[in-house]
Image (cartoon, rainbow over all chains, first blue to last red; front, side, top):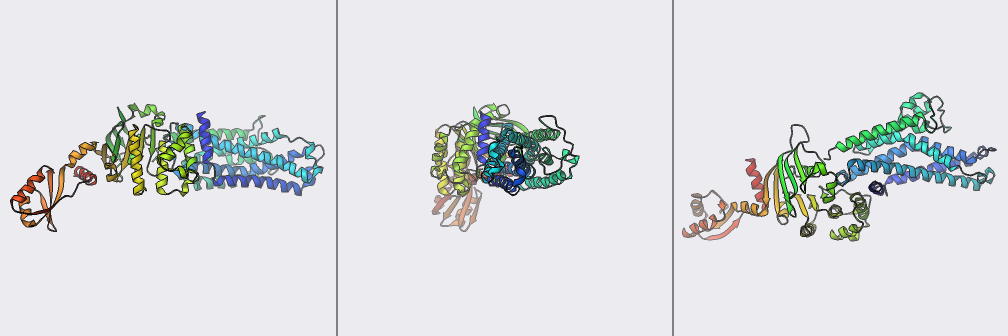
Length: 263
Length: 302
């Protein structure tokens, strides 16, 4: 109960931040591009015996995972932690009757909740996008197929898991550096490198957490067949590395935070 | 039992460079304790140690008789603090700021209106805190510190940025809180402010406590080493007479002398009158706490 209240407090802090405008921009960009791309390439959507929703899902999830997920997570985490440095509130947070570990994990939980909420909003947006296309092009017959919502949520779950490594690294960096600029610029440069590594289609991507959201699922954007993805059923090796990376950086950041002297 | 006890506390930001050495502080319950010192004397560092934001190299800190190492973080239910400038989420309103701290302190929401009324900010509760004046921010900081109705209030330089009306209002609030049975630790370098509020005083200089005791004890010391200024009709004659028994200086036809106790003053005046010297004015030079504070810290320096 106490942890839930702390998460609520952390989410209240995110109200009215410029990051929310960025989220809206990201969501509308993805939806807008998916809509326009399908509008322009309408003949390829309508394939006999194939559910047209799957194509919309693939475009939406791919667009988000490859181009939006990394910068979004980097900016969100940098902003969420930076609020405390900017307002100089660590000294008050650490004089509340809650342990530093409690506060550390409640902020992390709020960030992950925020990312999940964004993806759910994007899912709803993609469903609406499909119905909008159906309204414009009834011949595609979206209405004759049920939107495979489970498939969409499964894809986004994989996206979140593959993002965990970046979340861990950035949560660590944002606590270590007082400013917004250093962790966010580091992240953006790392993201650009990730795009290059993703496009190279080589196993190097396995050792680079920023590339995990790009290569963990096939989005028909890069050829990722030579990366060396091993599927274990419900999870693959890239997602497993992402989880390991997340725990390593989160535990390290928490240990350092608990020991930190607040000047 | 004291509200705060610091026993032989030492602390340094770097090894072998102590900022605080072997300090002892005793803040009695239900008192207003004035923690005085010049800038850089170690006031804020001491407060950060009390609040466990820094870890001491040596010594023990107790809050209401309990070692804070054993009670952290639960003892913060009893403590409200305002350290230097108030820290607010400037993109949010005053009410949102208080809602956040309500959740962390598990304080009832009804307290929000109560503390806002107390600091006279109820009308501004929906306003963004970035649009607040310095005084309003300071008062909101105090409201946050009071939100969970703590027994102990630690205020570091709370009058910073307040106008005279704000200072008077703060004084009223603190007196009201003391009447409710709260203990208040108040640090300041504006000594006249503290003089009007406190019951106990601790003076820190160069990381060492140079005075600790009641205001009465300080008043007693204050009655010693008093500087007095005399204006007479024949200053040369009076100066010769006084210099024979007292340390004094003649400046602009006024005699300045230091007496060890106020009882000596009538004797000096009597001797001047007996020598047919007319006295126009007798006034104290060092009468306020600020001069007292300076004399204490300077003595230790010497």
